[in-house]
Length: 116
Image (tube, rainbow, N blue to C red):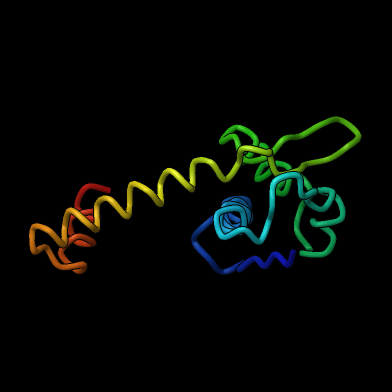
């Protein structure tokens, strides 16, 4: 898996990494059980601080996406994609209901943005 960071972004580097991992899990690029690069190795490859990578990994662990074990590193949890599947089901239901009621996709998006 190739990670990239944008030093000029207003989003923290740790959050950028976490977003990329979440996205890869949700689209199937990172399958359950896949091991992520060791923090030291990833930090070196991206020319960032190792603690930044560890912060991203810890956030993903707290969110139930990664499993971290001493000496074994970080890997994608077996049930990491379950929440994404449920979210997709809810999204499909929302879009179907919107179509039934004649609400356009841009209006649905605008409604979501006002709630977020």
